[in-house]
Amino acid sequence: MDHAADAHRTDLMTITRFVLNEQSKHPESRGDFTILLSHIVLGCKFVCSAVNKAGLAKLIGLAGETNVQGEEQKKLDVLSNEVFIKALVSSGRTCILVSEEDEEATFVDLSKRGKYCVVFDPLDGSSNIDCGVSIGTIFGIYMIKEGGEPSVEDVLQPGKNMVAAGYCMYGSSCTFVLSAGRGVNGFTLDPSLGEFILTHPDIKIPKKGKIYSVNEGNAKNWDGPTAKYVEKCKFPKDGSPKSLRYIGSMVADVHRTLLYGGIFLYPADKKSPNGKLRVLYEVFPMSFLMEQAGGQAFTGKQRALDLVPKNIHERSPIFLGSYDDVEEIKALYAAEEQK
Ligand SMILES: O=P(O)(O)OC[C@H]1O[C@](O)(COP(=O)(O)O)[C@@H](O)[C@@H]1O
Ligand SMILES: [Mg+2]
Ligand SMILES: [Mg+2]
Image 1 (tube, protein in one colour):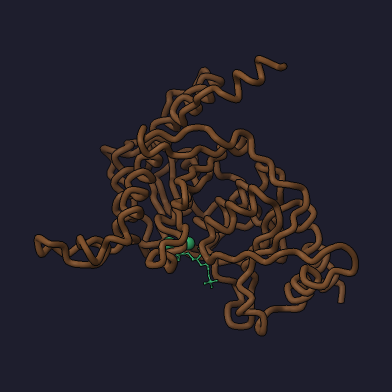
Image 2 (cartoon, rainbow, N blue to C red; image 1 turned 90 degrees about the vertical axis):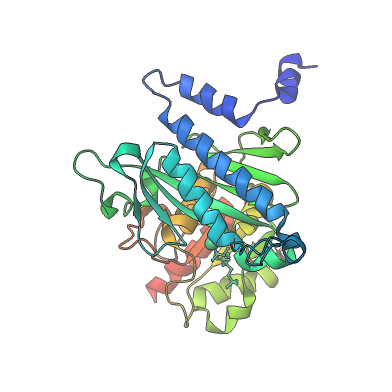
């Protein structure tokens, strides 16, 4: 019996200790990233607790209802946005924040300013809130460019320049998945301790999967390569058809793809030529995690992380997941180009 491996397996590693261990590998580090991350984790715990009570809204007055004291309560996506802005500003380590919920970027006051830019979707999959289906928070972190005043250009950088990305899924358990550019690790919240514990060390996506995930209701408007790919998933020349799973919360669909393998698609279509998902705080963080886990992310034209966004709420088609599955869709788009 390999006692060392066994001891490792039973080792209780909190996310705080995990990040501190990583920090100690960089003697020059002053702990800024660790502090920033602890504030993101705090935001996630706060939102998790609010999400867990969402179904009680009508009884006790949460999420857009009036509570027993007659106070107007906030909708969960608005509340989550405010929680994250507050958590990120009070970390004292951020300078620019871009949220799905805010039209403009937020520039942090000089007195609280740090070197990180955070892009985030405070509540992803919000159409699933009222039926209690998994939703989440997605984030990506950039370092401000050297010199000069912070400007929106600091976040209009390709996804490959992110220093870290992750998401928290508020599902049957609350799971925090993080990559700081050296692999992907997953942590599960123990609600009784209020701690995220490392439960999914060094996540690697299977090289090929058995599941495809797409909103097939849009099929009549798809382009040729997407339509052909989905047809192949259902009627392969050899082997078994893939299974279809689609939740409609990117966090949940991508989480399953990461753990079980397969492909997640939100393609362009005739009605939405740029797709639906937002580059900075949906496409980039998830593409970053996929690549770090050994998968790929493709826009239909290029590697997703090479995209250079021109505005903060830009959208892009996205195909991400297992390496071999994404290779197949890349080949179909390449063939279309040759025509
Ligand atoms: O309902 P559709 O068109 O399939 O779109 C689902 C996609 O939209 C989103 O819900 C958009 O996220 P928000 O809830 O943050 O707007 C993704 O989570 C999901 O992948
Ligand atoms: Mg979203
Ligand atoms: Mg959202």
